[in-house]
Length: 463
Image 1 (cartoon, one colour):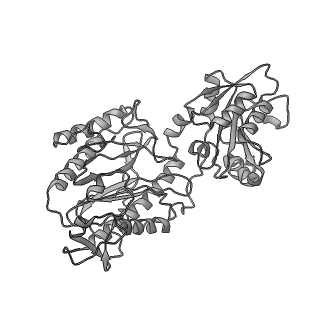
Image 2: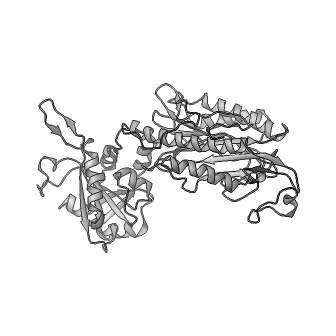
Image 3: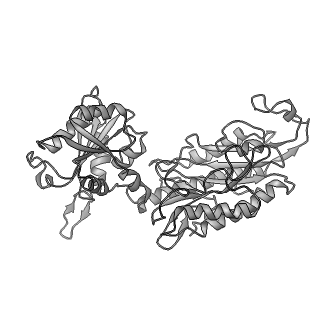
């Protein structure tokens, strides 16, 4: 279940020419339309809308565009040959992006299987015929979507029912309704995204290996740092330490005080070298700020305090990695050691439950019970001492997506989730350990293993 990388000798994410092509099967969307006795599906957004990027595999533009799907073609048009009766999908893209949309949305979805007679089958891989329609950039995406619905359905004899994601922009919904469509919300996209294909797991695994390399750099820097007695170093003026904090010992690395921002820059440089973006998600806290789940500020890193590193970069195809480790330099074996042992045990208890058919809540429940056995509050609220969040969440084109290990439903093959128990004391620090796993037919696979240990070691070969 391990790739054995341990954060070392990691190739750039996305550099493998043998990665399987990313294609989205639109059949679940077609089936959702038919199950709801609706006429079409419409999504509107831009390249920052993860649902729309997933559905189209179109990585631009930064302005709104639309996707329209109908379960059958308009036979009256007769302009698509044998594909008129097949389900159809239209990407309404700005004219300046027509070539890119044709390449990514249309050509990228063709099967391209070679026949024994030398012919090439260029049918669409899921049987849903795709095309690109471009209109004036000044036309609103919702207006273009409404026109495409009318065009695809032809004379339907009345108002159409259109399924839309809950996140559809309000103005786009208004245009669709003004055109005589009745809108109905659907969770079909969320459901489809939750179970990853082999090609998606390929991307997640590659990004997670780059994540491990960034973690290795951070651990190596911590291992190579030295404790500096109070008064012999000046804490940087732009840190958040007050005068009392400035009188405490700090860690020094390469001739200057080590701070969370310096450590973050080291991690992010490694991520960039491996072809992934930190996306502002390199969370590093030290001491009390390690109890802040999303700390991206600048703090001095001090001996004896927990240093929590949560690294979540995004790869070139839009998929995220997610990994957390916690270290202590020159610790005294107090609270942080007890917390670390408890979190390790909670992680093992959670992983032991991961397999198809297991209720997601069971995974969280086992982790919480283990932490409680070590004397930590498993139901603490944010800002209190104990376990303050769920054991895990789905990861894909969004850093947080379905399924939630605190929510309803069962684990299924293809679900990719984090396992991340943690305990926190706002006055002391925090400990969290997190890995990314894919649920398989008979259990799970950790997408990129990384060593455990509260005492940092040099791991990236540069120290």
